[in-house]
Image 1 (cartoon, one colour):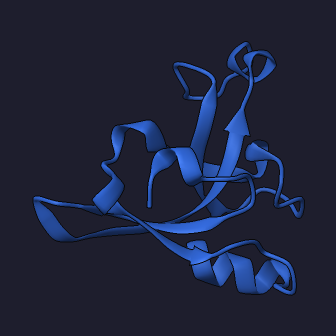
Image 2: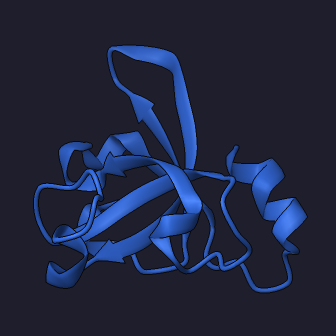
Image 3: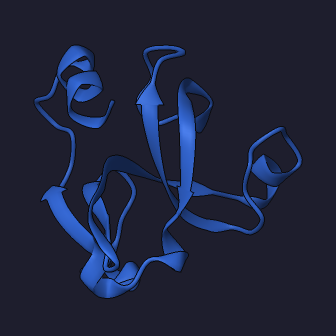
Length: 99
């Protein structure tokens, strides 16, 4: 899947071409200019992958996640769509999926 095809709320799996055992399942969320002024570990605006849904119950806020991945650094062959959106998933099911 191409980085340009990603949308907020998608669940994707990230791999590394060099090491196929290196897998992460992440939630795609946008980081905007306002977020960069907070203590988020991001260098630019754009879509990032988040995992570790540990700190709250709002799945659409990046502050509720523990890990962040810059999706623009991954090749198209290293991003695989798992779910188009999280509609129908409970927070417990989402935690299980991406933790």
